[in-house]
Length: 376
Image (cartoon, rainbow, N blue to C red; front, side, top):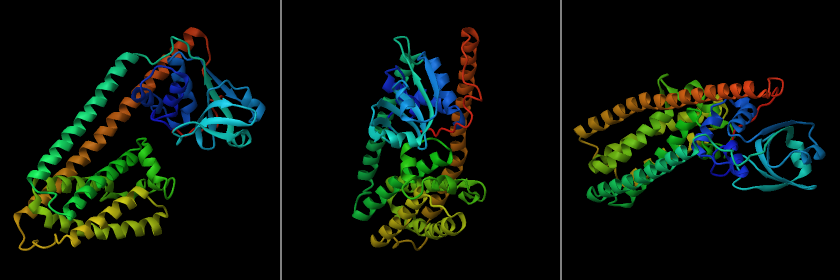
């Protein structure tokens, strides 16, 4: 789907309803997945877009009778139908950057018969839109400023510490940066945070492989430390250590070698015990092996002996960062879930109040029975 981030915000964009991606996506995803249709109805009501629900027997005639654009429940999740003709349907799917054309017959075969449409007016829009828009722009500026500052500091440390003195250190530096990003995606998956980047990578080998592996008990070391947290700790500490203290490279090489037995265990466990493949996990394990080979080819294992106090400092850094990550990450995502629950409760209460005042009926359990919409 386009940059909106959810089927709800993409539908608002198609309708031309003023909204901000971050706030509207958070509101939509605050609802449980099995209440996706109710979420769409509630929020469109709140945004004064006059939603209508259709529940018909799938057919070309029924499809032509639904007001476009509308959101349809299909076997592939929610799809936004932007145009219907006698032979073709224009739809935006969960992974489509723009509308695609498909035959009416094929679409009807995948359609459940349930759909929701809206009739926005000039009064339609997100509550406190201007305030939310200002915050969204401010956060975007903050993000880019952070990126610029980080790149500047990395360049300064790299030049002053001669980190990029040869090809091998450059390669390891890049591999550590990639490892940080991949482990970040793993953390998002482990915390059940929606991420199109993580979903697209995970779907390369097995559509639900990452979720299956991460939900297994073996994904948590000693029952305390998820392997994704250990991974981001390893790559981040190694990344910073290369910048601020290049003489520790021999011990970073030893640390990379110590990771190799884990990669063998992980691959065997996924294949023979879990019978599922986590693509992101395999990416991390590939990075471990690439780092080891680069360290070996670059001659960085020379200078390990005699052992120096640097090794103790490096081990202490790994442990301290791991303990900090283990405490911080659950609080971050725990706070987000708490905010989401509050938003959902607030939304459902406000819409109920509107129903009581207007006399309009919102969808009941019978209306939405059997609906299981996959959020994009």
